[in-house]
Length: 120
Image 1 (cartoon, rainbow, N blue to C red):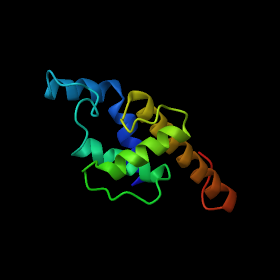
Image 2: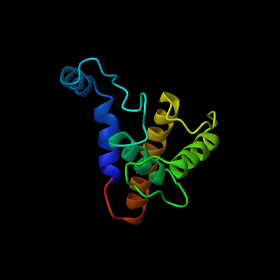
Image 3: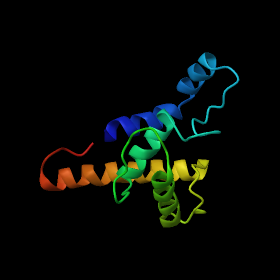
Image 4: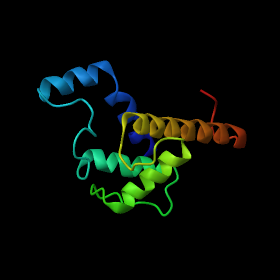
């Protein structure tokens, strides 16, 4: 699951992915969180990302961003020094990606420290 989140975050921000998405969806925003993020893939990504970033209690990843998801998003924003409005602003999405990348780095360091993997 973590690799899917990391790959989605990096690929979705890549130039070629953006180009092909724009070709397939003319007139739509490249930001998957633009407009209504209450349902669908963007909401699932957000719920996964919040869970990985430490949401407690863990959110059910169902693609329906209700009050619990918004509350966890506001708490995340507060922890990262952002305006806790519960909206997936570009700054919030960038902070979520940073948190996930940091988690991945920490996991790799722990694996190397414990002898489970080689440093890459």
